[in-house]
Image (cartoon, rainbow, N blue to C red; front, side, top):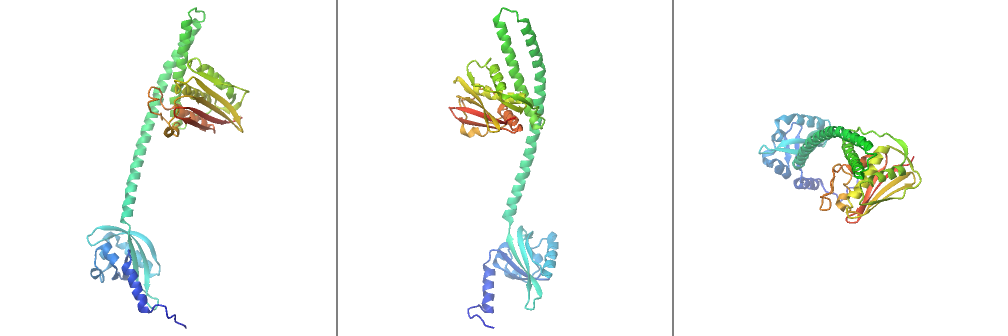
Length: 378
């Protein structure tokens, strides 16, 4: 057998190992199978507070809380059978009696004959990590609690909206019926003002009904009760009818729609109509100094795309990604005098998504906005 003249001798290897143990940042402790401490490096002194002289010869229970002594039995049983214990997280105590969270790895020590005579333990302080985990857990529980409170408030709010909306619909139904009766009686009237006034009153009742239905639909969406009643219809015809109705009150704007050949879609006509109505009304409402609103309906591949373009105040860049959020309203000097509840776009987006379509907006502040939605073709 050839001996490498450059390989370290036994004494040199021992000195090297001793140097590594002494300079380690982790506590390294060895003990007999009976639990008597036989070595104790400087990092162990720093972690547990006991000097080498104080620790060597003492039982390992010196640093083990009484309620954790069963862990020592488990570790020794593993080591005695030649097994290694990896990254065992536990609690130990220092000289002052303070608890320390540590991660410990324990390996068996063999003599020259291969017999297990003890255990070597490497311990790392994980107190800071455990403290952070505890803080995170505390924050998580607090957030869960706040989330539950928020959900409860949301449920109460939705219940309230639903109740109030139902209560408001009853008198509106009566008012609408009275307007229809009055219109019949005014058919032969020679006073044009009365007929015009009743027409405007009917439009306002429809607007109020649409707003109440919006609140009701938001509440239904929250509990998953919105139901689509799909049928085939001409979406271009629907757009034209809605524009004709809006023109009765939006006299300050010209609403431009080219129309075209019938375009059949299978969808909930009433709900798609509410989306179009909301987008066109918003275009008028948020462009008080402009005069034109452009509506287009084009077929692209397997989809139909409807767009509503205004030349109004536009949307700030930081608000664009939130306009379809529930109850979200752009708040600035341009919008402070414009009424609204922040439900129209949210409800429109949910209706379009329920149909498997998409809704989006392109806008530049001060230059107007274009809202789009797509629906699958028949």
